[in-house]
Length: 142
Image 1 (cartoon, helix red, strand yellow):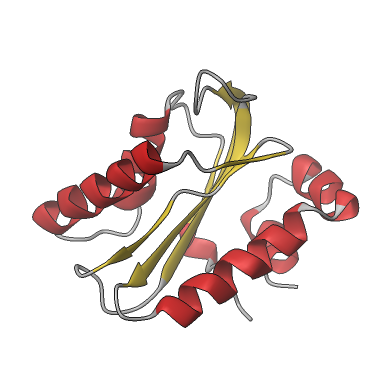
Image 2: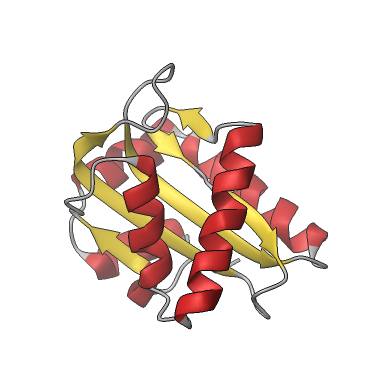
């Protein structure tokens, strides 16, 4: 399963908090401003229900949205720590998953695929040292 396109990879973002990171990731999709705002609101509501820090320095904000027609995954790697939630460890890697609201199966499949990669120490070690979008795309989609 191809998780992310090279154009949806952000490296070394200078954003330092959850809301700014989410805005940055959504803006990378070049959506209409109103749609972007609606998606941001959906993700932030989901974050209030249950934060999406997975551990190992990863967060996976996600939502099922009526504002998109096809699934999108954006990956962001930050060289500085992002305070995602005051009660959790800092984050350096963020996968944002957007899935059309009627596509629950794909939502779960994407979450499982990303989660299974994150628990692999070799994957994390490689991702931590890579800074080239093409190399990152290869490892994310392997």
